[in-house]
Length: 220
Image: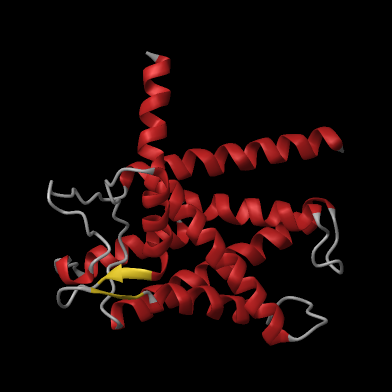
């Protein structure tokens, strides 16, 4: 049993790492000019046009791509280890159920995020800061989770799509969870965890190209 569990976890984390790397490499980057020291300043931001086809591609990749499968596998594995929810069985059947639950919640999240984000004229793409300094770049990555460029005019706006997606999917997922406590409380808790994961993902995207370059130099 322990050997099988080890193999499952090794597969999950390898898939999560590899898909995260691919996603980090594929995200668009925004180059800062030598005089641009205020990438957080919404007054200096330029409109970022995006077509419906581009939005659709981003949604499909985000909702059903390898990173979505990896994330659901990791969440399902963690809930399996924590025996959460306790009424669901262990073993392969229990893991499949937990994986399906996590994947379903993720699809709901991406659907809400895409719809609200489009209506609110939000740019769903990730932009790296290209600033210097660990804490400066970390703060930028965290802030970019909650504040995003607009697509209809200059400036930035609160990411209502992400907030609605995280907390909305947390509430919806309680429909199939055997919740014993307050549906609102557990839904908000799940949404908060999802939002925290998004923050971590943005920080990862910000620093991954630098880490990747170091790995390649060592390999060469």
